[in-house]
Amino acid sequence: MPEDLKRRVACEAATLLYFGIEKEYKQAKDKAAQTLGTHFLPSNFEIALELDKIAEENEGDKRKARLIEMRQEALNAMNLLSAYMPVLIGSVWRGTIRVGSDIDIAVYADDTENILTILRACNVKVTQTTWTTVNKKGATLESFHIYAQTPSKHGLEIVVRSTEEAGKKRRCETFGDELVGLNIKELKKVLATNPTQQFLPK
Image (cartoon, rainbow, N blue to C red; front, side):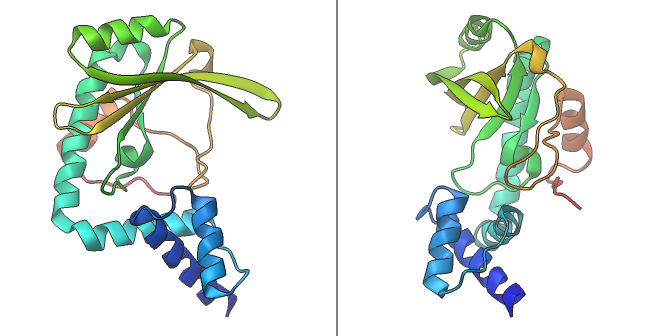
């Protein structure tokens, strides 16, 4: 049964990812299919759902407490950068964190030094910065990545994109839906009403 095989491959790939044996979905998927002797490959979305289940089974209530803590720290960082349209994205937005997950925030600014100045003035521990270039549909997009650490020792990655990219729709490579995220107002509401809420495609 192809569907059963795909589910088994998804579960095996998710296990490889969860325990750090593989870092990327494609490699995990290929290795899992090879191990199970099949060519039926699940989607990234199917693997992500299995990964979420494994994290929940292994981490339970600690995971929920950590998610709330990470969302609160994300809000603190976003408040510092409120002038730059910050949006919480990644697994902390989705509510699908696992051990080792970091906080991902996108901001929009044409001067990356302004962002660094604010972070350093507020004693945010910046550990690394790097420029990344990707080609999408013939267009070259540059982004500046700031890696830092929160007071609770969670990893924090701030992606600085140009202001002209603000509001542009992006597709999530893992879940296949639109990468919406949460702005400051929305994150405050989630923390006040349902702090462990998940945001997954229907």
